[in-house]
Image: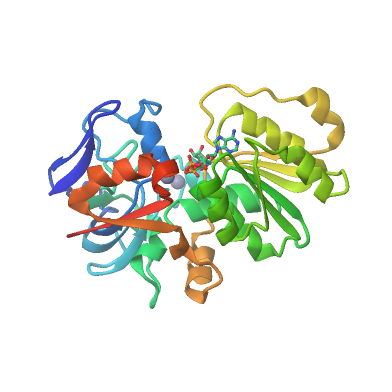
Length: 347
Ligand SMILES: NC(=O)c1ccc[n+]([C@@H]2O[C@H](COP(=O)([O-])OP(=O)(O)OC[C@H]3O[C@@H](n4cnc5c(N)ncnc54)[C@H](O)[C@@H]3O)[C@@H](O)[C@H]2O)c1
Ligand SMILES: [Zn+2]
Ligand SMILES: [Zn+2]
């Protein structure tokens, strides 16, 4: 088969790779019908994720068709059409039993395209198939369901649910990439009074309007804090969501939240950030962070099937699998290309 193989920082190729085989009896082999690229894959290519070593097939998001299953797989059968989630769950460890699948102790967690070969290939081995795949609902396009492999549960769980968004809230989202846009879209499920999107790129702010932000702020030329304070009678946002992953945006999120408010960090941070407890201690704020667990995937599947979540709105580009390197190029130049999510399918 062919696959997108990592060969060290800045080096990758769509090349011949061995067909995956069943290793454990809880595995399934899935033929990839639709796959996408994540910002995290770009981090890997920069060399920021040292656990990913030369020869690793990248990718942790896919929709596909089950080709074969191990003897221990009970609920997934050959021919089933499934979503392959970015988080794998053993289903029986302490964390899995608390639905904290991202913290799985039994060999799961974020492993695809990280610790084991991933989904950017014609076929992928999916461990713990019963608890790590979801049936694709009837009547919904593969590519829409593909958005539930990572970005939608991440924005919803780590942003909106951790941030405890309530009806009538003012929600400020710093960063309007696919993750921030997921948070904006899923915050709307709770009928907030206002959703303020803050980004440096006007193209991303235009997208934010389409996804449900009613106020957009380019903090390269506007004062986001002043705008949010004016909107809230000087108090600040009920919920501030950080979806970038650099020190200035985390600090901005902490300033944007009102006393008693929530600050939900989604961004993956590569360097230390100053926590201004000398200002925050008296403000009764709650700060949360986290890796996505994907416990909300069944809910998001129903919301997508029911039309309350328009998952397909993220998709800006289509390619075939043999165009993977071109797709990476378009995705990595998002500011120029307007890319949000790219879908690749077999030729
Ligand atoms: N916690 C998790 O489980 C999890 C899962 C997936 C991704 N992430 C992280 O979420 C973050 C966002 O992911 P993404 O794919 O949307 O990334 P992205 O790079 O596509 O989007 C980031 C956005 O932030 C904007 N930005 C950059 N600097 C800014 C600044 N100073 N002020 C305002 N906006 C600024 C950019 O213009 C861009 O639109 C990343 O750190 C990613 O690694 C976390
Ligand atoms: Zn991802
Ligand atoms: Zn587990």
